[in-house]
Length: 282
Image (tube, rainbow, N blue to C red; front, side, top):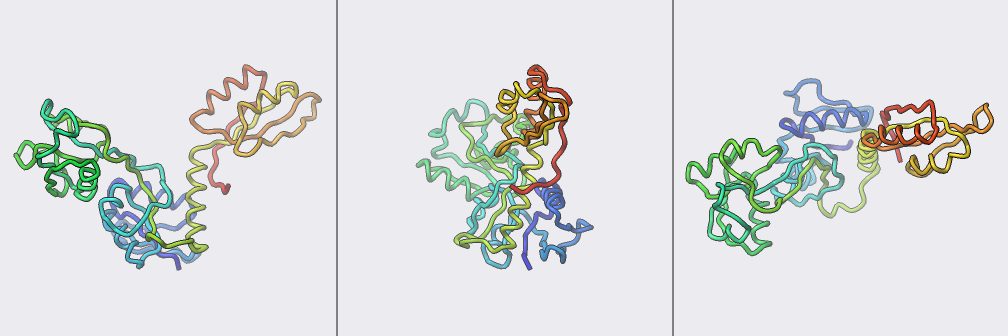
Protein backbone atom coordinates (compact mmCIF):
# COMPACT_ATOMS: atom_id res chain seq x y z
CA UNK A 1 0.00 0.00 0.00
CA UNK A 2 1.32 3.44 -0.98
CA UNK A 3 2.02 5.68 2.04
CA UNK A 4 1.61 9.41 1.40
CA UNK A 5 2.23 12.38 3.71
CA UNK A 6 -0.27 15.24 3.48
CA UNK A 7 -0.22 18.62 5.30
CA UNK A 8 -2.52 18.50 8.32
CA UNK A 9 -3.12 22.28 8.59
CA UNK A 10 -2.15 25.68 7.27
CA UNK A 11 -2.30 27.12 3.75
CA UNK A 12 -1.16 23.83 2.21
CA UNK A 13 -3.76 21.60 3.82
CA UNK A 14 -7.04 22.64 2.16
CA UNK A 15 -5.76 22.92 -1.44
CA UNK A 16 -3.84 19.64 -1.10
CA UNK A 17 -6.98 17.84 0.05
CA UNK A 18 -9.00 19.34 -2.82
CA UNK A 19 -6.42 18.26 -5.39
CA UNK A 20 -6.28 14.73 -4.01
CA UNK A 21 -10.08 14.55 -4.06
CA UNK A 22 -10.10 15.71 -7.71
CA UNK A 23 -7.52 13.02 -8.44
CA UNK A 24 -9.95 10.38 -7.17
CA UNK A 25 -8.53 9.70 -3.71
CA UNK A 26 -10.63 9.44 -0.57
CA UNK A 27 -9.65 11.93 2.12
CA UNK A 28 -10.18 12.14 5.86
CA UNK A 29 -13.66 13.06 7.06
CA UNK A 30 -12.59 15.07 10.11
CA UNK A 31 -9.68 17.48 10.61
CA UNK A 32 -8.55 15.62 13.73
CA UNK A 33 -7.95 12.36 11.87
CA UNK A 34 -4.24 11.63 11.53
CA UNK A 35 -4.52 8.68 9.14
CA UNK A 36 -6.97 7.90 6.31
CA UNK A 37 -7.03 4.70 4.29
CA UNK A 38 -8.28 4.55 0.70
CA UNK A 39 -8.62 0.80 0.09
CA UNK A 40 -9.87 1.14 -3.49
CA UNK A 41 -6.70 2.94 -4.55
CA UNK A 42 -4.46 1.07 -2.11
CA UNK A 43 -3.24 4.30 -0.52
CA UNK A 44 -2.75 5.31 3.10
CA UNK A 45 -2.61 9.05 3.88
CA UNK A 46 -0.77 10.42 6.92
CA UNK A 47 -1.66 13.97 7.99
CA UNK A 48 1.47 15.61 9.37
CA UNK A 49 2.93 19.05 10.11
CA UNK A 50 4.03 20.46 6.73
CA UNK A 51 7.47 21.26 8.13
CA UNK A 52 8.01 17.60 9.11
CA UNK A 53 6.87 15.95 5.87
CA UNK A 54 10.21 16.05 4.01
CA UNK A 55 11.90 14.47 7.04
CA UNK A 56 9.40 11.61 7.20
CA UNK A 57 9.75 10.99 3.46
CA UNK A 58 13.56 11.08 3.63
CA UNK A 59 13.49 8.44 6.37
CA UNK A 60 11.87 5.98 3.98
CA UNK A 61 8.92 5.43 6.30
CA UNK A 62 6.63 7.18 3.82
CA UNK A 63 6.82 6.84 0.04
CA UNK A 64 5.94 10.35 -1.04
CA UNK A 65 4.58 13.59 0.37
CA UNK A 66 3.14 17.03 -0.33
CA UNK A 67 4.79 20.06 1.29
CA UNK A 68 6.14 23.50 0.40
CA UNK A 69 9.35 23.97 -1.58
CA UNK A 70 10.52 26.35 1.14
CA UNK A 71 9.91 23.76 3.87
CA UNK A 72 11.65 21.06 1.83
CA UNK A 73 14.80 23.14 1.34
CA UNK A 74 14.81 24.47 4.90
CA UNK A 75 14.56 20.97 6.38
CA UNK A 76 17.87 19.83 4.91
CA UNK A 77 16.27 16.40 4.56
CA UNK A 78 17.41 13.86 1.97
CA UNK A 79 14.31 14.47 -0.11
CA UNK A 80 13.79 16.00 -3.54
CA UNK A 81 11.07 17.78 -5.48
CA UNK A 82 9.22 15.63 -8.01
CA UNK A 83 6.26 17.72 -9.17
CA UNK A 84 5.24 21.38 -8.60
CA UNK A 85 1.53 21.65 -7.81
CA UNK A 86 0.78 25.30 -8.56
CA UNK A 87 -0.87 26.34 -5.27
CA UNK A 88 0.32 28.01 -2.04
CA UNK A 89 2.68 30.19 -4.07
CA UNK A 90 4.79 32.63 -2.08
CA UNK A 91 8.05 34.56 -2.28
CA UNK A 92 10.77 34.42 0.37
CA UNK A 93 12.53 37.76 0.85
CA UNK A 94 14.62 39.98 3.12
CA UNK A 95 13.05 43.06 4.73
CA UNK A 96 14.37 45.89 6.91
CA UNK A 97 13.60 49.42 8.09
CA UNK A 98 13.59 51.87 5.16
CA UNK A 99 17.03 53.24 4.37
CA UNK A 100 19.00 50.78 6.52
CA UNK A 101 19.81 48.17 3.87
CA UNK A 102 20.17 49.14 0.23
CA UNK A 103 21.82 46.05 -1.29
CA UNK A 104 22.89 42.52 -0.38
CA UNK A 105 26.41 43.61 0.65
CA UNK A 106 24.86 45.73 3.42
CA UNK A 107 23.80 42.51 5.18
CA UNK A 108 27.42 41.84 6.20
CA UNK A 109 27.77 42.01 9.99
CA UNK A 110 24.01 42.24 10.62
CA UNK A 111 21.68 39.87 12.43
CA UNK A 112 18.83 38.33 10.44
CA UNK A 113 15.75 36.84 12.13
CA UNK A 114 13.84 34.10 10.32
CA UNK A 115 11.81 30.93 10.74
CA UNK A 116 13.73 29.41 7.80
CA UNK A 117 17.28 29.28 9.12
CA UNK A 118 18.43 26.61 6.67
CA UNK A 119 17.36 28.54 3.57
CA UNK A 120 18.78 31.85 4.79
CA UNK A 121 22.12 30.41 5.91
CA UNK A 122 22.60 28.63 2.58
CA UNK A 123 21.63 31.76 0.62
CA UNK A 124 24.11 33.93 2.54
CA UNK A 125 26.91 31.40 2.22
CA UNK A 126 26.36 31.08 -1.51
CA UNK A 127 26.81 34.85 -1.87
CA UNK A 128 29.74 35.17 0.52
CA UNK A 129 27.86 37.29 3.05
CA UNK A 130 28.90 37.09 6.71
CA UNK A 131 25.77 37.67 8.79
CA UNK A 132 24.29 36.09 11.92
CA UNK A 133 21.02 34.18 11.64
CA UNK A 134 18.59 33.99 14.56
CA UNK A 135 15.84 31.36 14.44
CA UNK A 136 12.36 32.48 15.52
CA UNK A 137 9.16 30.45 15.25
CA UNK A 138 6.09 32.14 13.83
CA UNK A 139 5.81 35.79 12.76
CA UNK A 140 9.16 37.57 12.71
CA UNK A 141 8.04 41.11 11.79
CA UNK A 142 8.46 42.37 15.38
CA UNK A 143 12.07 41.14 15.66
CA UNK A 144 13.48 44.44 14.39
CA UNK A 145 11.26 46.61 16.61
CA UNK A 146 12.30 44.59 19.66
CA UNK A 147 15.99 44.78 18.79
CA UNK A 148 16.49 41.08 18.16
CA UNK A 149 17.68 41.66 14.59
CA UNK A 150 18.28 44.40 12.02
CA UNK A 151 16.82 42.37 9.15
CA UNK A 152 14.19 39.67 8.76
CA UNK A 153 13.75 36.98 6.10
CA UNK A 154 10.24 35.66 5.67
CA UNK A 155 7.55 34.46 3.30
CA UNK A 156 5.90 37.37 1.49
CA UNK A 157 2.50 37.00 -0.16
CA UNK A 158 1.03 40.51 -0.40
CA UNK A 159 3.58 42.48 1.65
CA UNK A 160 0.82 43.99 3.82
CA UNK A 161 2.17 42.66 7.13
CA UNK A 162 5.64 44.03 6.32
CA UNK A 163 4.30 47.47 5.50
CA UNK A 164 2.21 47.46 8.67
CA UNK A 165 5.40 46.74 10.61
CA UNK A 166 7.16 49.67 8.93
CA UNK A 167 9.46 47.47 6.85
CA UNK A 168 10.42 47.39 3.18
CA UNK A 169 11.60 44.55 0.96
CA UNK A 170 15.34 44.37 0.33
CA UNK A 171 17.03 42.87 -2.75
CA UNK A 172 15.91 40.09 -5.04
CA UNK A 173 13.75 37.15 -3.89
CA UNK A 174 15.58 34.45 -1.96
CA UNK A 175 13.18 31.76 -3.16
CA UNK A 176 9.96 31.33 -5.12
CA UNK A 177 7.94 28.67 -3.33
CA UNK A 178 4.82 26.62 -3.98
CA UNK A 179 3.38 23.26 -2.99
CA UNK A 180 5.40 20.35 -4.36
CA UNK A 181 5.42 16.56 -4.30
CA UNK A 182 8.59 15.21 -2.69
CA UNK A 183 10.25 11.80 -2.54
CA UNK A 184 13.38 10.41 -0.95
CA UNK A 185 16.58 11.53 -2.70
CA UNK A 186 18.14 8.87 -4.90
CA UNK A 187 15.05 6.70 -4.83
CA UNK A 188 15.53 5.97 -8.52
CA UNK A 189 12.61 4.93 -10.70
CA UNK A 190 9.28 5.17 -8.90
CA UNK A 191 7.08 2.14 -8.45
CA UNK A 192 3.84 1.80 -10.44
CA UNK A 193 1.70 3.18 -7.60
CA UNK A 194 3.83 6.32 -7.29
CA UNK A 195 3.77 6.77 -11.07
CA UNK A 196 -0.01 6.44 -11.05
CA UNK A 197 -0.25 9.00 -8.23
CA UNK A 198 1.88 11.50 -10.14
CA UNK A 199 -0.10 10.94 -13.37
CA UNK A 200 -3.33 11.64 -11.53
CA UNK A 201 -2.01 14.90 -10.08
CA UNK A 202 -0.63 15.94 -13.47
CA UNK A 203 -4.07 15.21 -14.90
CA UNK A 204 -5.65 17.53 -12.33
CA UNK A 205 -3.16 20.29 -13.16
CA UNK A 206 -3.94 20.01 -16.87
CA UNK A 207 -7.69 19.84 -16.28
CA UNK A 208 -7.49 23.04 -14.23
CA UNK A 209 -5.42 24.85 -16.85
CA UNK A 210 -7.41 23.90 -19.98
CA UNK A 211 -10.95 23.85 -21.33
CA UNK A 212 -12.31 21.94 -24.31
CA UNK A 213 -13.38 24.27 -27.13
CA UNK A 214 -15.82 23.27 -29.89
CA UNK A 215 -16.80 25.40 -32.87
CA UNK A 216 -18.01 25.27 -36.48
CA UNK A 217 -16.00 26.94 -39.25
CA UNK A 218 -16.10 27.07 -43.03
CA UNK A 219 -13.51 24.74 -44.56
CA UNK A 220 -11.66 27.54 -46.34
CA UNK A 221 -10.90 29.16 -42.96
CA UNK A 222 -9.90 25.92 -41.23
CA UNK A 223 -6.13 26.41 -41.34
CA UNK A 224 -6.41 29.88 -39.79
CA UNK A 225 -8.72 28.51 -37.10
CA UNK A 226 -6.40 25.60 -36.32
CA UNK A 227 -3.54 28.09 -35.93
CA UNK A 228 -5.58 29.67 -33.12
CA UNK A 229 -6.48 26.31 -31.54
CA UNK A 230 -3.62 23.89 -32.22
CA UNK A 231 -4.46 21.74 -29.18
CA UNK A 232 -1.89 19.57 -27.43
CA UNK A 233 -1.17 17.36 -30.44
CA UNK A 234 -3.71 18.32 -33.09
CA UNK A 235 -7.40 19.30 -33.02
CA UNK A 236 -10.19 16.93 -34.02
CA UNK A 237 -11.87 18.01 -37.27
CA UNK A 238 -15.15 16.47 -38.49
CA UNK A 239 -17.23 17.29 -41.60
CA UNK A 240 -20.72 18.73 -41.00
CA UNK A 241 -23.88 17.86 -42.91
CA UNK A 242 -23.81 21.24 -44.64
CA UNK A 243 -21.11 21.07 -47.25
CA UNK A 244 -18.24 23.49 -46.78
CA UNK A 245 -18.46 23.47 -42.96
CA UNK A 246 -16.45 21.47 -40.41
CA UNK A 247 -16.64 21.03 -36.64
CA UNK A 248 -13.45 21.49 -34.64
CA UNK A 249 -12.65 20.34 -31.12
CA UNK A 250 -9.45 21.34 -29.32
CA UNK A 251 -8.02 21.96 -25.85
CA UNK A 252 -7.12 25.59 -25.12
CA UNK A 253 -5.73 27.31 -22.05
CA UNK A 254 -8.50 28.60 -19.80
CA UNK A 255 -6.92 32.04 -19.39
CA UNK A 256 -6.79 32.48 -23.19
CA UNK A 257 -10.23 31.05 -23.98
CA UNK A 258 -12.19 34.32 -24.20
CA UNK A 259 -9.64 35.97 -26.51
CA UNK A 260 -9.55 32.88 -28.74
CA UNK A 261 -13.35 32.83 -28.94
CA UNK A 262 -13.33 36.47 -30.07
CA UNK A 263 -10.68 35.74 -32.72
CA UNK A 264 -12.58 32.69 -33.98
CA UNK A 265 -15.81 34.65 -34.24
CA UNK A 266 -14.07 37.35 -36.30
CA UNK A 267 -12.77 34.56 -38.54
CA UNK A 268 -16.32 33.35 -39.16
CA UNK A 269 -16.60 30.52 -36.62
CA UNK A 270 -19.98 29.96 -35.02
CA UNK A 271 -21.48 27.77 -32.25
CA UNK A 272 -18.31 28.35 -30.23
CA UNK A 273 -18.54 26.50 -26.91
CA UNK A 274 -16.18 25.78 -24.03
CA UNK A 275 -16.51 22.84 -21.65
CA UNK A 276 -14.67 22.28 -18.38
CA UNK A 277 -12.31 19.31 -18.12
CA UNK A 278 -12.75 17.30 -14.93
CA UNK A 279 -9.99 14.74 -15.45
CA UNK A 280 -7.49 13.74 -18.10
CA UNK A 281 -4.43 11.65 -18.92
CA UNK A 282 -1.90 12.89 -21.43
